Length: 109
Image 1 (cartoon, rainbow, N blue to C red):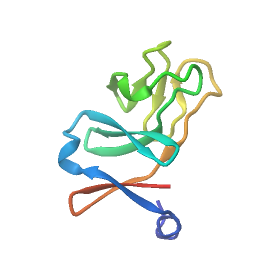
Image 2 (image 1 turned 60 degrees about the vertical axis):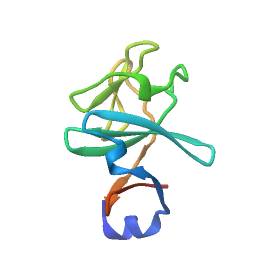
Image 3 (image 1 turned 45 degrees about the vertical axis):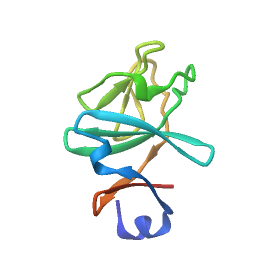
Image 4 (image 1 turned 180 degrees about the horizontal axis):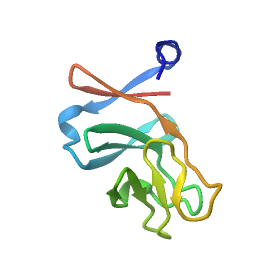
């Protein structure tokens, strides 16, 4: 992410880094947004939580190879882009940037 884009975002603290051990995900609420925050393979990711197909919570699905699977229908979504990896083309969910500063996890909106 470019510095100018990072400067334009509003960064919201959503918890402590220790709350997300490697390989875990948690849902956070930022105003009306439900966002799944993932700590996967050393990276940090945030996706709009409801599946765009059926509204099932993505954060409850298994994560493997950089993608989360919707437990409602088995489609998988890239943590990095929000695009469907396995399932019908054209579906995606929103992504949000994540940063960790001094042990605090922040999501940019």
